[in-house]
Length: 275
Image (cartoon, rainbow, N blue to C red; front, top):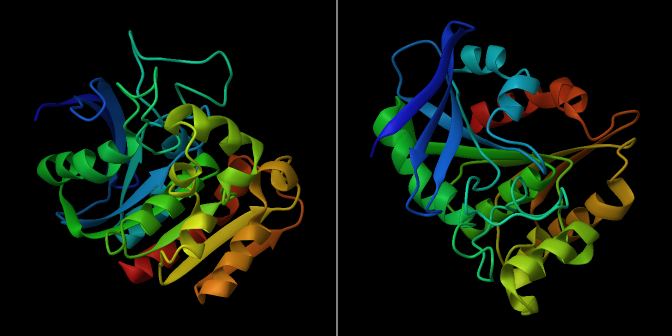
């Protein structure tokens, strides 16, 4: 499989690069970023999933994670948040369509031909990373922010054993119960509530899906906290299921990347210890 390098720069003794490849999953050219730490590798892989309106550059540029990732010897992979390009369906709203793939495989028109984000991230992109970068694909963990936090939780729950650890910043924990998910899930998956529940972290946990432990950080000045995020739902689901959840609530922090910068080091150390 051919991978095109779009840019590459030295960073904290390692390399931050951005790439594209022709995806069989989405039928489009897909982009992703890779931070390779200094050394020969192979390095454990930490997947970093971004949120609504973001792309493969957002976390890499804004989170400030590379310095500590270099020290810990972690490879960071930042996938784009949706397929894009000519002929790819979109929506005028910022919370649907391009930039808002919700990390699932759509089954409904007009999204189904290209919106296959779960297949790309779980099935196809790991093969690309393993073939073209000094990655140890036996050691993978996943984290995400907002929609990407939803993606990290759901993909870990849907694919047990794939990721050694999972964490999230301000995740959408129960999309079937909040407006973002109530808009996106029927559009992408149709009218079947069971299909929606299969991409809802709290519903998956209630249905028996398990991970060993979770780390979640949530800012209490987040404008989306009450309407869209509702971390108390995840706390209740984990308590009922016996999943060890570390849920940290932070006064004064909002939904943005200043919040992520403030606590990303804790997440990298969390994953590094488990990788």
